[in-house]
Image 1 (cartoon, rainbow, N blue to C red):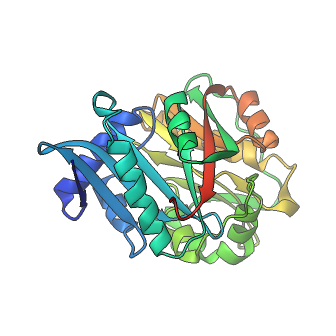
Image 2 (tube, one colour):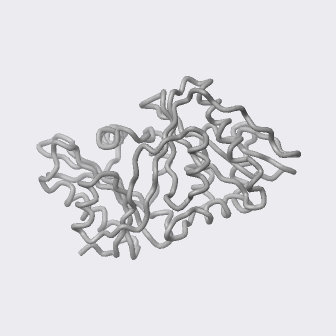
Image 3 (cartoon, rainbow, N blue to C red):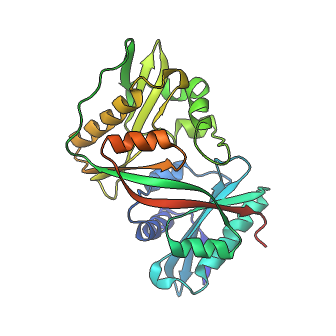
Length: 293
């Protein structure tokens, strides 16, 4: 079995093929999106047996403070042959070399959770996936006085410029066990949906909601960040913007949307349920200290 670093576009496509096979219900970024996220701390691996790709791996500095994240994946028909263990050890070694004291991973099934626990990972958080068909949309509620909605793509600079006043607060309010650390650069790129609807008052962004389209499954899309500034909560902005994304989806041939919400974010989960979303699966966040040993 051979592990190699992804360097060419063909490598990236093979990496994507494993990701899609293992997580067919999750959107996978395009090669261009993956290239845009490349950095000196990011490691993408392919695992081969007898020349055939049987698995992949990802490791990078996490947006969780003082932690790294990793994701070893093996095609179902090639599991229990040591590939997952080899990937895990190589990815964890990379994060240790970055000087990170902790590693985290997300697992979606019992087999992966058992594998993680064998290596000393423990449960630290949970997320819930909620899904909705894009039909029978409720009426769009009125906006509060003085608020307008614009697309981020129509106002270049508005999204990156709102990081200090809006983005930091939105990220800090995530219902997670450890605070997130999102750089302005990642806010301006990874956290920006397409489309991304922005609620604006007196030139300031006070709320947002967006979508990430799935190029491999064009009739599905994942919700991006939905957030409302603290002093604007309770005025219906989250409902209004989320319904805007659903209307956009309907107009662009999307049949189904889904969203992942932290288990502790009861308010957003309740809003989704009110809007017709149903729970489709759960995932577990696991963590342990580095080095792996």
